[in-house]
Figure 1: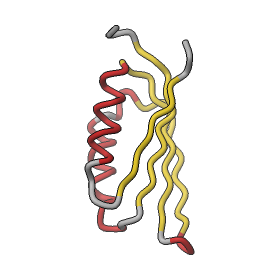
Figure 2 (figure 1 turned 60 degrees about the vertical axis):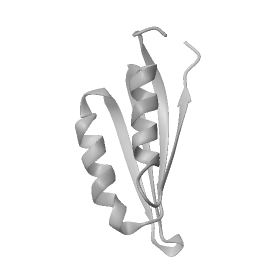
Figure 3 (figure 1 turned 120 degrees about the vertical axis):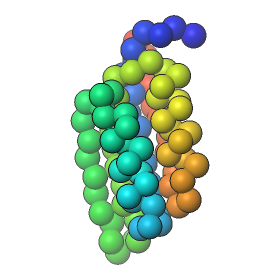
Figure 4 (figure 1 turned 135 degrees about the vertical axis):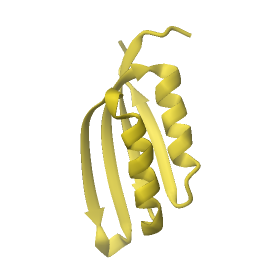
Length: 83
C-alpha cells in the first residue's frame, strides 16, 4: 500500500456522552492530518455527529477509524476520494 496521502471524509457518531472526551483526545493526537472538522450536537437524539476532512496515508486513516470505533458508544466510517 502506498504511503501517498489521500483525502478522506470521516464520519463519527457518538451515542455515549462519556466517550466525547476520549474521542477528542484521539483526534488531538492526529490533528496534523485533520484539514477540517464540523461537530453537531443532536441533543434530542442523544447523539453527537462529527465530520472530519483528512489528508493522510490510507493506513493512518484506517488506524484512526479503528481507534475511534473501538471506543464505547462510538461509530466511525471513512469515505476516500477516488484520486
